[in-house]
Length: 66
Image (cartoon, rainbow, N blue to C red; front, side):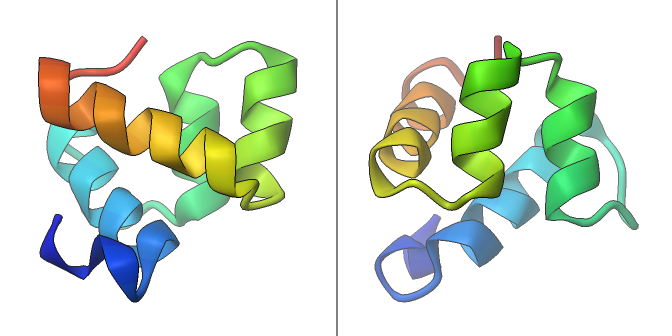
């Protein structure tokens, strides 16, 4: 996720598209597909920096979600 520092949502969108094997989903659709708790999904949709950082760390460490 090279572009994370300049465009965290864009970088996470591309990473989630890869993990979820979907090419055409937008940010909100990808978050819905992840099956996150309503609280976590809401923070991600609101682009909460801490939630974005947690998702980035999860993707980097585990190469998966959930």
